[in-house]
Image (cartoon, rainbow, N blue to C red):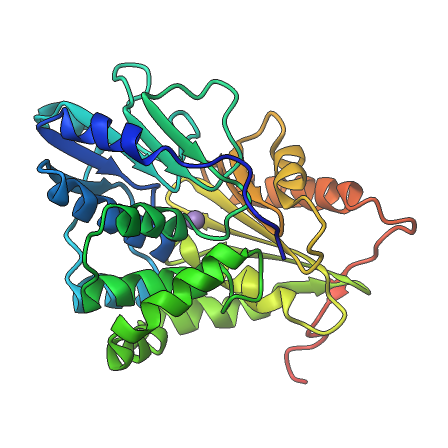
Length: 347
Ligand SMILES: [Mn+2]
């Protein structure tokens, strides 16, 4: 678990940057997760309170059934946008939440446009430039950071927003078990009286597409384990997020403390790593795995990234290379021998 954050937010500075504009675009990272969705929505409410109109945009898809249910049920006004359409948006303020300009996981054109607001809990990008930056890698969820502003500005909470924020915090921190601070726990408790409990239940137990089960079945046949490491190169996946979901699922296996999962989706090899070691640096391991191959990031116990990959043949080659790098960077004293979890399909 993490301890308190280092830099204090400057609420009045954020107020000035927002209130001096007319229209705001809030960018989320590609294939947004609940934390990005809720954080963006809270910022939209803050904007509304300060008299600026805004829209929330992202690229990619809402791959997880939970996230689709969340957006639909709570009526979160997000817009899926293709990169080429950004220049048609009329705006004078740009914000990024749960991501930063130039990280490669959002469609903000950082070379052409000035970024006004960045609020994120991922490690600070070395070249980060914006009129207002609030980067707190210690905080478990970006939503917690936005809730702090909302409370400061005295903006009332409504039940749909509270439900989105509550789901964001629990999904980002595995029910407040992974990477969270007192601030996240306090924010969750404060939200709770406003949460629409049945809606939260519906989001947490969604109806899944049949493709989801097909992917799970294929993935299970590719699970490789050693004493305490698990690797699974699933191959074709129906949506990129299932890779992260499967990594969460596998790292919970008894005696496993590091796990890597990859999948092939629309010309990309998507990769997730997880560890159960709270003192580990999954971001560093992720960056080493991707060195000169692709882009990625993460925080303490989770990491994610992608490599451009033209077909499944290339995917298989990359899978081999990545497994080697992963095992090497875990700095285990003994060499790790992976073997299939399911030895024979008939067993
Ligand atoms: Mn986040």
